Amino acid sequence: MKLKTLALATLIAFSGVALAQTPAATPASPAVTDAKAAVKADKATVKADKSKMKSDVKADRAQTKTDRAKLKADRKAARAAKAADKK
Image (spheres, rainbow, N blue to C red):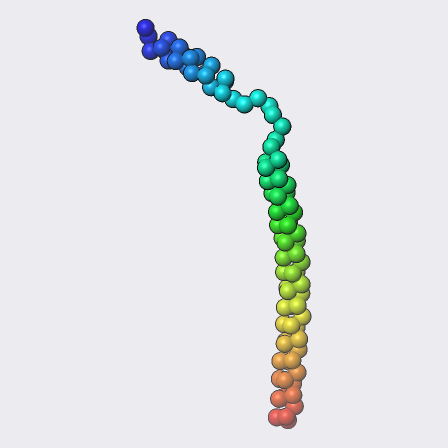
C-alpha cells in the first residue's frame, strides 16, 4: 500500500469517529447564557468608564489650560509691579 492511500484510509476512519462525537445543535445552557449576559454587562461598563475617562481628561485639559493662562497673567502682573517699583 502506498503512503498516500494509507494516510487517506486513516483520515477517513478517524473522521467518522470525530463526526460522530460532535454535539448536535442544542440550545445554550443557562450557565452559558448567564455568562454571555455578564460579558455584555461588563462591556457596557467598560464602555461607560472609557467615555467618563475621556470626558474627565477633556475637563482636566481645559482646567490646566485656564490654570496656565492665570499663572501667565499673574507672572506678567508681578513683572509689571516689580518694574513699576523700580521706577
